Image 1: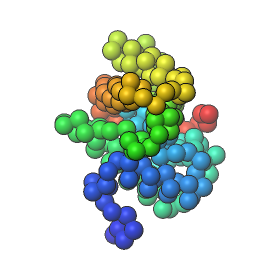
Image 2: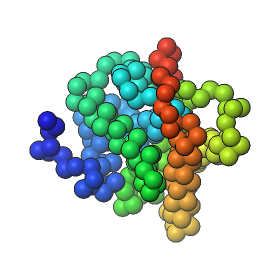
Image 3: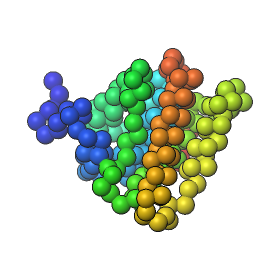
Image 4: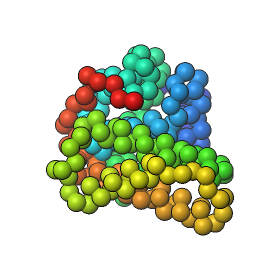
Length: 200
C-alpha cells in the first residue's frame, strides 16, 4: 500500500509539478538539497555503475545531503521511488530520461542555477564509483570534461531568446551525456556504493 491520497502519480504530472512537489517535500523534511541536486546525485550514482539495491546507496546519500543522519521512513520511501523511476527512465528504449528541473515558467536564472546544481551533483554521484577516467571511452571522457565545464557556468545571463536556446541545448546535452554514461557504465549496476568517506 502506498499513500496516494495527497500525491497524484508521477506519470500524470508535468516534470515542473514533480520538481516543485519534491522540492517542497524535501524542504519540509529538513533537507537542504533541492530536487535538482538530489536527482543529479542519484543520476550520477546510477550512471556511474552504483547499485541501488539494498541500503548502501541510502547511507551514501545521507552522507552527502543529510550530514550522515538516517532519513525518516517517508523520505527513504520517496528517495527509493525516485531511484526506481530514474533507473527505469535510463533504461527506457525510447530515451525517456529527463533532468528534474524547474518548469519553463520560472525565471531563466533560476533554471540555470538548478541546471548547474544538477550537473555539479551528477559529477559528485558519478565520482563515487568512477574515480579513474582513463578506462572510459573517448566519447564518455569528453562528455565528463564538458560536464565539468558546464558545472562552472556563470549564471548571470540575459533573459533573452538566445540565452533560452542555450539553456535548452545544454539541458539536452546533459540528458544525452547522462544516458551515454549509463549505457557504458551503469547498465550492469553491479558496484556497491562506497560509503567510507564523506564527499562535500
